[in-house]
Amino acid sequence: QVQLVESGGGLVQAGGSLRLSCAASGSILSVNAMGWYRQSPGNQRELVATIARSGSTGYADSVKGRFTISRDNAKNTVYLQMNSLKPEDTAVYYCNADVLTFYRRDYWGQGTQVTVSS
Image (cartoon, rainbow, N blue to C red; front, side):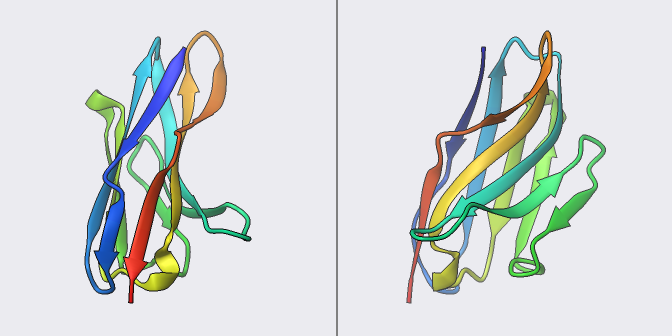
């Protein structure tokens, strides 16, 4: 069984910063790509940023230059540093990981709320 546990969400004023963390635990052989997604009320879940095990990254256009994704492979943990936050960044943020145990599949965290006030 694999669990992804997120932390770091909260309420911040526009222009502020938050750092999200997501740690994978369980009977893990390796963690491949990891990523962050977000979903706001009435909208579909959308990709925010991804990072390969090698460290190569990808970002949604809406967050480029403001958000930075990183990971610690030894800790099976992914981070999302969010700077210059805007009210439109308000959403539930979900961690995703491509995990190899006895088989390979995607796992999701429970979500963490990020609220940016104007």
